[in-house]
Length: 177
Image (cartoon, rainbow, N blue to C red; front, top):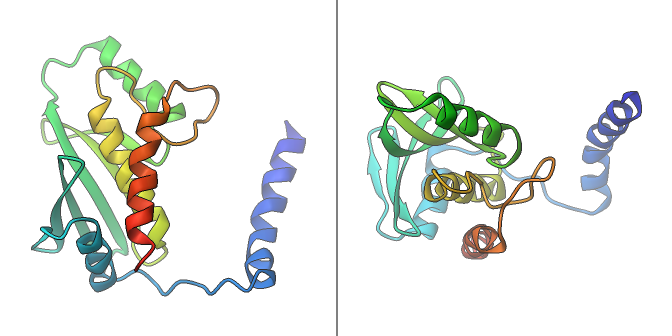
């Protein structure tokens, strides 16, 4: 197990050097305005709402909220009232949060079950945002069945290729930004 920790640390430390060697331009910090341009590229009918945006991805309404002062953003999809969730359902969602939901998560707040993606705003990269949105929509769509974000899985998940397809489509739309 110690070898795995050393490997992960080496990869993290090598990442900035690798980006410089490949000539990759660092992305500018994510701002409310840049976030809005990306979201409008994904859904031309997106609407600014207070400190965030409402948009629809693959037929699923998504609310994205920003807090620049706290340097946070949150993408959310309401799933159902939390009242009546069984212990088995809660256990399955916690299992999915560990291995198949990936960057998206199931969460409960204010009497509601949500699919969410939460990230520091300024450090958020375009492809991370797009992938996180796709994963959030996927865990909303697969709630009650596969409970998966549709991307690669940590430790033998159960995600079929069709859910990965949404993330690929969104990344393709975002390439022009």
